[in-house]
Image 1: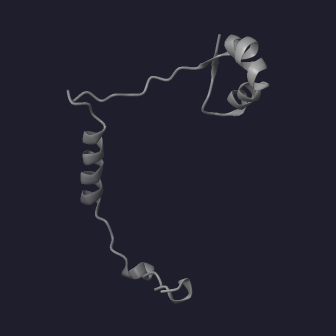
Image 2: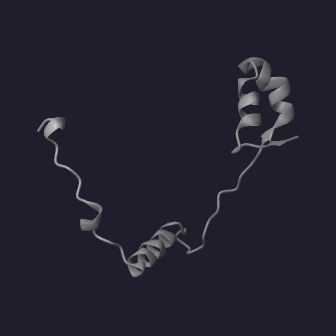
Amino acid sequence: MSKHNAPMAAPVSAQQHVSLDDLAAALANNNRQLKGRDGAAYVRQQRGHSLLLNLFIVGPITMYITTVYYSVSKNHYWHL
């Protein structure tokens, strides 16, 4: 079947609606999957980037590309 003859999506009114109970069950299942074997919920421990290391060692090697990227990105932060 070519892309010109592809079937059209069902109208919004014909789509199946998800109940709140189904959403709660899916969320509970997701929470179970995020726990370790011992049942504890694990959270990723974030570490920042070393400003001194980037300025004096990594920066000259990478032409300070990583230093600029880490400074601009909202997902990275610096520590000394």
